[in-house]
Length: 433
Ligand code: GDP
Ligand code: GDP
Image (cartoon, rainbow, N blue to C red; front, top):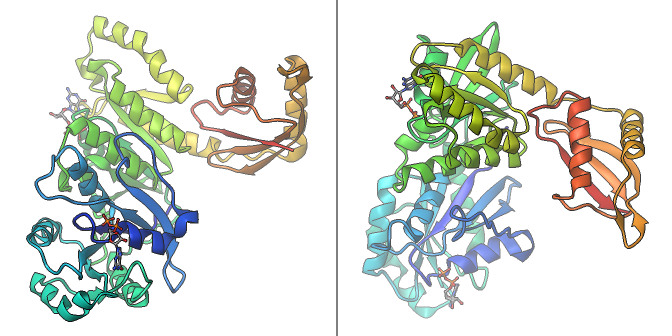
């Protein structure tokens, strides 16, 4: 799994951030994320640098010093946290303002490679006065006009010069990556320490890298695993705010570069909404989830009964996930976790031949007839598997079926039962032909 180098455009309002964003991304590629509370105020797009290197770009939509830290400020802080290089934009037409200075005072503490982008170089004021921005002490400085597309090549050069410093350790090894996720204080760090035991080996970070310095490599029975410690990442981050909400956000980011998630729960607290959102996120992203019910040592008979009553809520989100009742404190059943990971990783690599797949669907359709729409039955023409991990199937039909359609659920469930895919996300893509 690799993730793209990420650039964030930051600066006070009206300096031209969105204009630059649109120029670099182009309307076509811009993706507006609409996940509530995460990227609401940010726009993320994908573009290519001149040498073809793909990168992600975030338009932070304004960093106003002194703004409500739980509003925009938190969103921006998160965007910055996720980024490798900052494009700190100022307005050459207006010249250096105290607001720019205050923005920089905040940014410099984060210590990420930064390019100072002096915008509006098409104006006389900018051309005459841009030297004053050197007072900020940011290096390099590039002069652009986002509106007129001037200086974009210089900006590209400056960014490319910074990227080698931030390149993540290449994750092209075969090692499965496991994200350890969960609400605060459920025991993620304790569990990781327990898993790693004495010989905690860190993936050596590339000098100056801002990424992944606290992934660890765990070796067991000759197999290596990369452990992604979201609690650790959260701890060293500059982002402040509601601890629980942040745990959800950090999990979401890290799950993307993991092959599988271990969702750690505090079993003594039963199943909480936060557990469901983190688990649901992983699932939506096509990652299988192993549930580690931690602090098992704290449960008495009554608490255990409570938990079992609650369990179906999680099961509904994750469709029969593997579950291990552990105690990071005592070490109870910690040795069951990696085998559960191996098992689900293997099962999600299922590959079905087209012949078998089509016979399978024919059988299911014969057993349970498809829904009608305006008198016409849903009709499946042909199915093929387009990828594995998560297993993804393309169904060509006379019309599509909504995600919530019970018939779609039926087909999905039958696939899951027949091919041993409990706890494995599968995707049906239904195309109208
Ligand atoms: P943001 O709030 O930082 O995202 O700023 P916008 O992208 O919305 O731009 C603010 C204003 O500056 C708009 O009126 C733009 O048309 C203007 N603007 C942006 N880039 C340039 C530029 O290169 N030259 C000039 N003259 N105006 C620009
Ligand atoms: P994180 O925030 O999810 O990384 O949680 P920590 O690993 O920091 O653990 C939070 C608290 O729970 C600490 O006080 C741990 O000692 C405690 N803890 C962790 N695992 C267990 C466990 O299995 N049993 C009990 N009783 N306490 C635990």
